[in-house]
Image 1 (cartoon, rainbow, N blue to C red):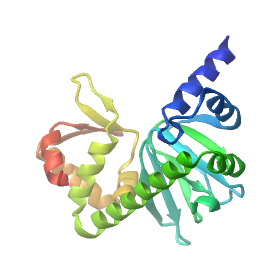
Image 2 (cartoon, rainbow, N blue to C red):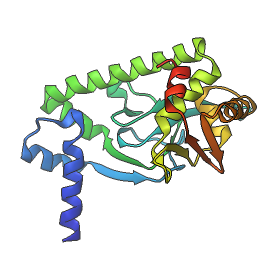
Image 3 (cartoon, one colour):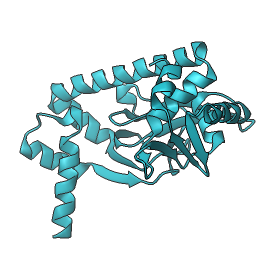
Length: 231
């Protein structure tokens, strides 16, 4: 019973992945058998440069940071991914992790596919190939948007936007909040220094925009944060 329920849950999650829409029941059954659906806890690094096999990740739920670390140990977040993103090491799709780490910023639900699984799907159904191409194009647009933000937006604007995107829990008043991230991690995500992020957060707090606790930032004024973020 438990196994049957688990398979039904997996099929339900797969059917909600946009690129798999319109597949027949038999095709979905095959997809359920050849793919893995894994839950990754917040803070876990689930892909490292040492990985040798080709793998494609489809992020069903959660937030992921893809980063690189140079010889001096400095960390640069190159991608901040949210639900629906497709990424990984898959030459046939032009996907390269390029010595990168993938870390779950929140608890994540991820569909994992091997190269052979992807090739079979691409050959079997051109609709999936089209949707994959569209999804990868959207990710490229997001990467360009991130570069634009880094070049033209202030740290305050980038940080306000990040807090609004990452807020996934609520306090007893129903106000959204960001939990589990250090000031250093927030700095890596906005491409700044920890000291600058701490100073900016303190300015937000003094202005009544946020309340700061231990690894907890409550969004007290989302409208003003959105204004600062340029939304």
